[in-house]
Image: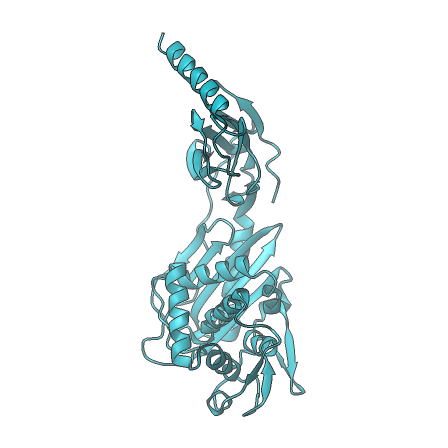
Length: 390
């Protein structure tokens, strides 16, 4: 990812700023279609911009198997963030958790296990027993925990998902989609960077039992740093993968492949396609002033304006110089102003075609000025209005 330093700022009459790149030849922007993927559904997404680079059947409601556990740990991470849980809290293992079938962490009834260990048992070992233990500790029962999962899904806009358990073992009315998993994975990586490195851990030892992460791409591709595998007879072999190359993060999801080897190969094909033909750039840093606007009748005479968060774009490779950004600032901004208020826009185009538009917002709150400032600025505003009308 290259900084947006190639763009030069010019001030025009009115309140428009144009940020223009150096002149460059206009190479062909044609991108070949994505590779043929042998999966029931798949999607490839730029995590920073949300741009979908490839997809097929991405909204189909499918059994997710252990991909369910991405939501399980997301719910637990949120509880830790709120302060209702702590990594060193101890969880007493129930008989139900101990009896969970399928992949296991090998915890025992009445054993007291740290939440951090249970999370790693879910993420790295895909322990169904650890998933149930966490769910019961957080919500009292797995059924109530599933409702918490559904609440988070609704909040994130996962419109084709419904969860009935914490481990993904087959059960009626339990489903999600490739697109929803991409939404969830993006949120997890963005909101919990302190925990995300656990998803790249290749093995975990508990009770003197070492188990290896089933994500084969962690050993095959050094840019891959997560996320989760899944398998049941109904779901087939599934994999959510994420990779970071040159500050561009892609999320690739395949569902319903024929083998563990196939899920790794198909994800690798998608990731290689995305990195080969696209690039991602951070154009502007969030919460940083892009312009200082004149503020009328305020305790201060200038108002810093910027973006509420970093602005990224995804474009075909070798087309950075075809970008153009225009910042438009509202006229006659008058105090009081509250931080976060919209007072303009940033519009980015690629070879003249709209690419992205974001609100330009106040970066601080500024109260009204004293009576003298208000009267003085009021007179100036009236004079400029009268002068404009001549």
